Image (tube, rainbow, N blue to C red; front, side):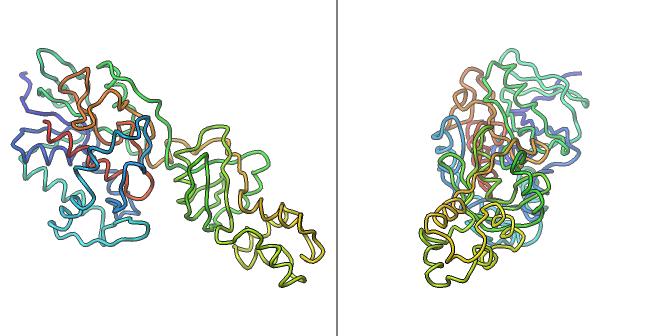
Length: 392
């Protein structure tokens, strides 16, 4: 059976793939999108608690991790959060800003999926879901993709299948295998925006499962002020998920439990309320269970008046930079995204085309560009998909 001919074949009907298909189709290209999942946009549907944190108004290249920190600048600069927001508003989708520049649908993430499907259809694009790819070939300047439903060919092939995070939704390392087949290097993939697990002396903090508090979490030079959540396995919450992208095995994670307190606050408290205890002060500022565990570990019992200034300074310093030593993460199963991926050194930052494999493109999470929590990864999907579409 003869392969159906298209101008471009996009592998993956997620955020990046559908954006690319919509834009390329509306530029007059005949586009086919193939996905093994039964429906398009599965990850979009579960994002943002079902409301889709579709972008972040503070998007900038320094909020993305990559072996090349400059790579994302071109695409992000040419397709901005304002551009995507204009698209959202043109479809009559109500939205709101939550915190830290995060934009969400007022209604449901289904609205974003419906919008993308409508945009693809507007450009005449074809989306075929529920098709497993059995082979990808290249000859005479054309890529041929064979699936369970037949084959199709095109002079351009776009890898938009994401990374292996959330495997229960069918996520795999297919993008990396395909990239390597065409001679492209891959930066080792690892879980990002993922809870950290605790062992050793830190195990006792697992007893705080369910307790959350606003902190500043640090790993290396990175620091984030948001909520941290103790779990039955270790640490989670926005501050920890953010820092996990920067964390490496063997690194400590420093947590400032009282980020609004200035140096010397305990000495000042001793002068003002000599009869107070560290435990009572901590209970006044933190959840009781957390305050008690910290007080027990610091072993600064009794009245502040009975403690030396040096002892209080030491307790203050530890509370400002409490060192946790994670023994790992909860892995790809719990990771919101994948760090690493197809090396940016292999791609044009303007078009996303592979330098050594003309006609082959890579976009979205498949590429070694990973954003912070809060809509940044969606903006990379939109921007990289748009950039590739301009070149197809």
